[in-house]
Length: 77
Image (cartoon, rainbow, N blue to C red; front, top):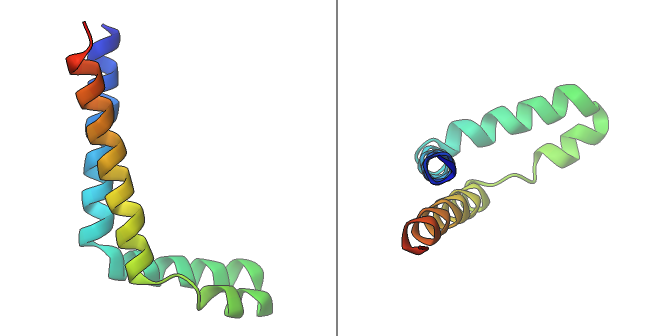
């Protein structure tokens, strides 16, 4: 039972990573708009920081972590 839950969690991590990479432009736009509306004038400076390249790196990290979780669970006895 625990293996099934962990494999599902790893799969969700992989799916989220793939979605972050494929939709990184709209996600960066959404994040910058949310930061502007939340933090006001300070948010304008903070909103300029998220880049599509960094979102791709975070997405790749999520894929690697999800895949590592799945591999570790399936190779353990």
